[in-house]
Image 1 (tube, rainbow, N blue to C red):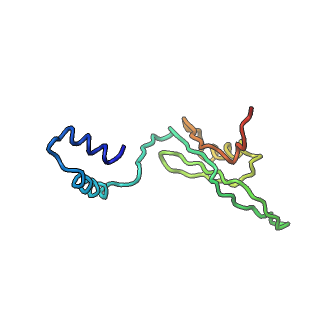
Image 2 (cartoon, rainbow, N blue to C red):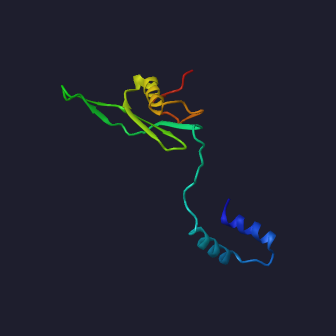
Image 3 (tube, rainbow, N blue to C red):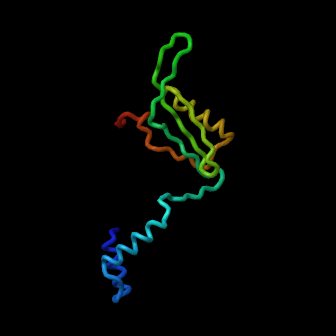
Length: 125
């Protein structure tokens, strides 16, 4: 939807209404009063969101000083915003999800994953 189309719809409903430049000015003033965030309401226990952060922290082996790159899993309960985070190697993908659900002390009705580029590297034909 463009501002021009909104103005045209406005003119159809109000034939003697504002010209385009005045309509745009009024719209700009109105836009400054709006919040740029989208508020979502979640029911308790309904949704849990889970994703790998995309940032790859490094774990350091205490005895040897060896560094290894790991993935950072982040899980959030929608209603409470309770957060779980764990650094893990991808070989433990199921285990880290189980750890998250144990930390939540339950399972939400819906788990909403993001597209996991960390876990899926190519199509399986």
